[in-house]
Image (cartoon, rainbow, N blue to C red; front, side, top):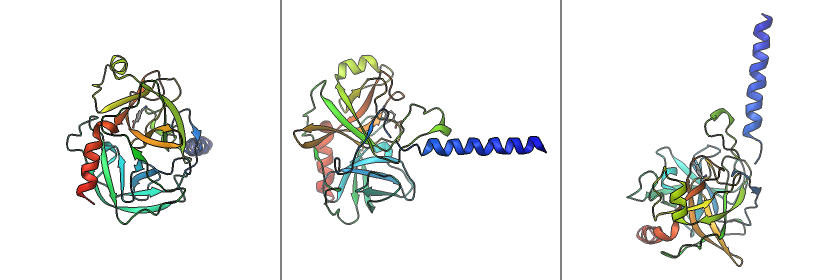
Length: 259
Ligand code: 4AZ
């Protein structure tokens, strides 16, 4: 009988710990809290009623871009205007998600999302300009990526997932594609991909997928990448992002056809 209660107590203690880990407040490994007014194009793209899944970026009053691998057969919605995953902001139903026809793990990892209705722009909700076709950022330039995803590299220990309720941002340098190919030999790094990061402890991670990788020019942000994949997180290996410049023509065409 006593052993039973001891075990029960241990069980509660363990579950409690798990709950604490899940809510430790801070996605993105090695990042800092960032206000939605700093990145008002940041959106959540998730199954209805779920706390977290993926990020997305607002590109005009009815469209967003995200990663193709974020799309799901379960009903999804969009939340904008909040830097807290569990509360605030405005929720929008989705009219349509167009995944790139050539998407195949993880090449062409882009989708275009059309909402029902239109966004009401404010200091917390506004679109980001996208990189021009074939105008990639320069190697070494510091880019910002934001998300509500994992704060630790613990993808193998699902019980210790630590997604963040608070929006986080981290700066990562753009890595030369050739250098990236030599480092991430286990993947085929195509022209549709950008590599960024490679500094231990600073990376996007699981749950940040679909979110933005942006370059700041003066006071203006430009969307250059979409969080796509990586070999683990925050190791010395760079993270991989969808190359917006390479897929800009596709994105524009989808928006035009569906406007
Ligand atoms: C993921 O699993 C994932 N470090 C996303 C981004 C990165 C790694 C993993 C980049 O969705």
